[in-house]
Amino acid sequence: MAQTEIAIVAGGCFWGVEDLYWKLPGVLKAESGYIGGHHPNSTYREVCSGLTGHAEAVRVQFDPEIVSYKEILHYFWEIHDPTTLNRQGPDIGTQYRSAIFTTTDVQVQLAEESRAWAQQYFNRPIVTEIVPATEFIRAEEYHQEYFLKNGGHGCHIRRPIGR
Image (cartoon, rainbow, N blue to C red):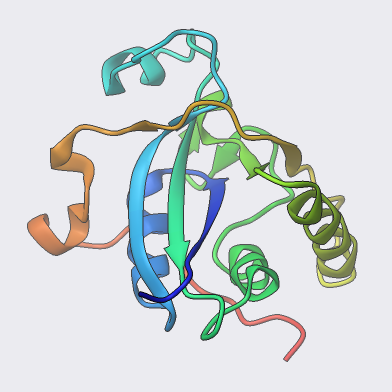
């Protein structure tokens, strides 16, 4: 069994972020969920109220022999706008904030280096939070692989940077 690692990122509506991570070689699993809040076992309706403090996020399980954590973060900067506070496209609220939820000191260091690197490609300041991961609450089943199940696409697009 290959060694796997976990990255947790929030870049707006989790449907689009999850969908794009599924397309990245080396990603074994991408799950939509909620993190960073103060209300245990929150539901989608509660998170959408903006009162739980959670962000819509994606937990990415990946094979580090195929894709590194650094590359997972590089992709993160390409698939959302990290310069808009609590907003991605038409979605507004703290639940749509840009954040990297870290699980180790190494992830903190790599996330901070990555954010500094990415800043050179954006005209406005990056507002992405880098914070310790708290409990990740897996979203309801109907949110998992939403676009695969329901068709359509989100407001997330990939804009290659630094290549």
